[in-house]
Amino acid sequence: MQVQDRYGSLDVIARLQADDRNSASDVQDLHIAAADGTLVPLSAVVEVSQNRGYSRIRRIDGRRTVTVEGSINPNVAYAVELMAALKQDFLPQLAQKRPDVDVIITGESQDTKESGGSLLTFLLIGMVGVYLILAFQFRSFIQPAAVFVAIPLGLIGLATLAGIVVNDSILLVAFMKERYNEGAELIDAAKGAVRDRFRAIFLTSLTTVAGLGPLLFETSTQAQLLLPIVASLAFGLTIATMLSLFVTPAMFLVLHDIGLIRRAKPGDSEE
Image (cartoon, rainbow, N blue to C red):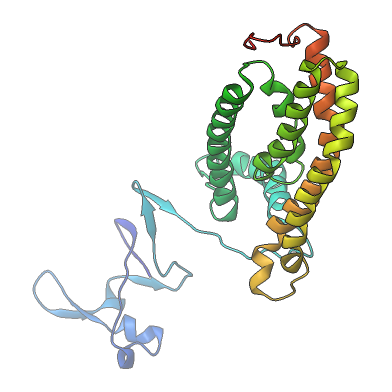
């Protein structure tokens, strides 16, 4: 309630027992001590008005805060679309009308941002580890680039595909290097690698996709949490595998054309 006297007004929060607060008159009949010690009803010294207020006032760093929560109907809009519309349409108008109000977006949007940052960090660490392993295997700091060009193809589905797609490219590069060092032309070695390693690469990816099949077609409520990841892995792996059969040999040929790959002679170590 708001108490007003000749010195101004201030907010007072008071709560009586349940039997003593059935109406506003019960509050006005509340007796308080005057300056001379006598008890007078509250209505004799103040004006009591009834208004809407907050049941609880939260403060962060001394500032009042209000939390606005809601559930998103996926049939109408997704969280990303809703946050984009909120930042583009509503928040600029709110900043003009209420410049002293700060808006902090939490919940799913914040969780997605934090997960994306963490995923990117560990993805970079994993790529560095993969590069060092490939450089040791190929005994070259240049040739792993032909394998790494397949990693962006895995991002079609999910960052998790990066390690799976690299395996297919390693098979192709190892076969091309072997045939090329034996004296075959690089273009013929590339064609032979795709032709001879197609079955191994295709079956490797097929078994992975087949293993994801039961989850992909599962309709239970528990499986709905995993369905987006499973769909990304299955379809992303299928597309990335097919594209790697063309992109990896092409990248290896490009490195050869610009002079970064040369035929290894007996007794020579590759750069």
